[in-house]
Length: 291
Image (cartoon, rainbow, N blue to C red; front, side):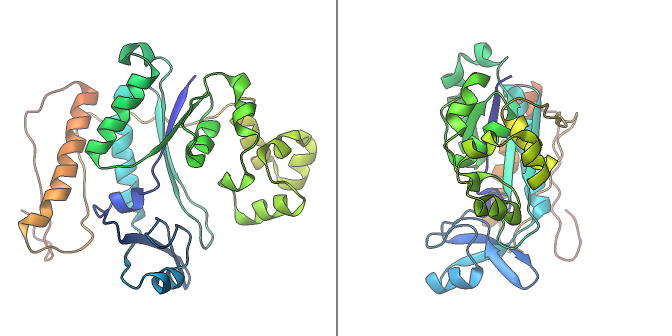
């Protein structure tokens, strides 16, 4: 198999229909609040208080996980026409300062000839993503775990064979792993810095010290263990809800969400190879009245 993984670092913003250059999304655990998208003067993971001290004009919005899930699911429906199976996940860590990872995988090995080869397929995917208003980092590898790691690392050159995985992954820092901070700290504490060093530890010794879950993740990355997943299939009808980030009082500000919804509908129809008989747009007002 050849998995294409798309990592969407700005999905928390684009899911809200707000992608202004001086706007960031924040998450919160207890009293701590931090950025989960990059800002001009601060990177994701920065405490909000520090980010505001560096740029007092920075505008922030609170994260809406439901909006992110809806946006990623819609992207999964769109990706279905490029290959199957398709699966997606938003990976979260329940600790302060964590940055969610929105990931979408599509198996493209059987679709390359249909789209005219790897480069042509990649160009078409990124062209349509631009129309849909999303930014993504992409990587291709025979396993989903490896493709996700490479996508997060920003390494877009494809890995086409399983035997080449170690060559591409070995020198990557272990900090790219989406593992709890306490696990990464424990690994760093005994001197591990690169992925090659983790792979070199005997399986039983690694499992006993750090847990079977993380050993399994390493095996899945190299194709030594299966990667179960739930495939996503587009539904028979298109239904999409777009929650605005704030109340609006003029029609002008409806243009962006309507354009996004229409683009997603177009992508859905293209995926299903269907035409359109009718469409209903419902607008929910502040007093719960619907038109």
